[in-house]
Length: 102
Image 1 (cartoon, rainbow, N blue to C red):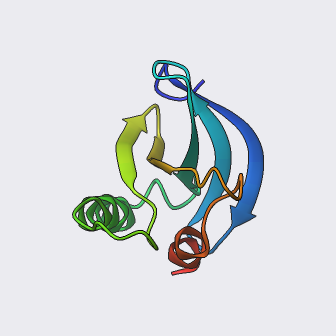
Image 2 (cartoon, rainbow, N blue to C red; image 1 turned 90 degrees about the vertical axis):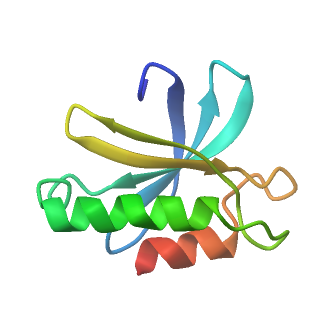
């Protein structure tokens, strides 16, 4: 359980900075995508700052081709971005996976 709320269920993809997991928001009962910063990168303050800025920038966007950002987590050395899970695909959209590789 991540942040006391998000259950990670299935690894969807891995990129240079993070892994993306299919998960469930136990509070709202909905599927989510959770982008978790790699542990070795979470020790670098500059990278964590960049990761958080990515979440803030993505949260400002509203487009049917970009997944929505719901939440961020920073707890016990784990940093994550919680996003919309595309229900029609049951997996993260290509936009999210592209962000993971950046």
